[in-house]
Length: 388
Image (tube, rainbow, N blue to C red; front, side):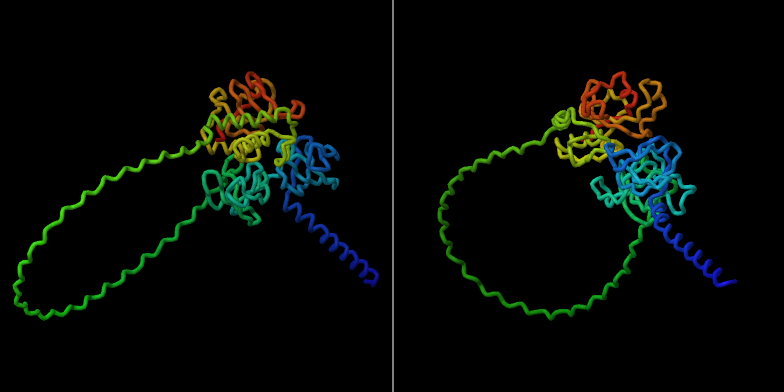
């Protein structure tokens, strides 16, 4: 073999190694965030906002690499041509590729994207979002609302225990309590015998002379004390009653009538709202109660706090109403509705008499009131109840 051939093969080998090393970061990123399929045509934008420019329309069946899923409403993705942009994270448009088999050691799978938090509270810092079909290990049941879990990377945290988000695929192991050892009994020491004392001779008593009695003085009468009047207690001001709280929430919501709608609105401003942001702001303004950030987590919160009803006629003023996806204006389109299994896609505040205070689209004018009677809202209604 000539020197030129050896040099040529050496260069080809170095080039192959270089190309392999160059692909490692991309492979690592794909393994970290995963791949997804487009299930309905969706805009690929240059920013995580509906006002961002559209780069292209992704078609049904296209595959994308998910680069970042830390935003609850938007995914940063790369398509097959290498174009990077943002798409809606809604499962109407994007579906994560399902794992081929259950990962050994896991006992649950994520049914819908959910926050993975550092503490078992909606105020806990978010580690990231666990994505649909991601497998996890439930290490313990914290309470009726939270699981302590570990992801397949070994990161520990907490997720909602609602079956809307987590489906069990195996048993949850309960650690056996460590028995407390019984201490050995300490032997009782034998008592030291007490010596018998020598008896002391009894002395002869000396006769005591009888004393002359002293006359008892007449006691001075004690004056009767004047009773001290009991002070009248100052009444403690009572907090608002349940009905008053309801009216405060509704009044706080009504002041935002006409505020523009924006899907995925900023939770730190009141310039625009989506449905759950609006409901959350009304409770914050009126009662300083911080509800969860999305309609689905607000639904889980209400179900965990109070009884709920699937009949809107049984709702009370101020109850929260939860709705499923729109399927048309006919009641028959919702015949197979399963109230506690459907995905919650909308929330509003019930005003009574079939009226709801809510916001749902730009075209509708933002925050407004509507009658649900005989409309798709009535057919889409899943359940409702009090958040107080």
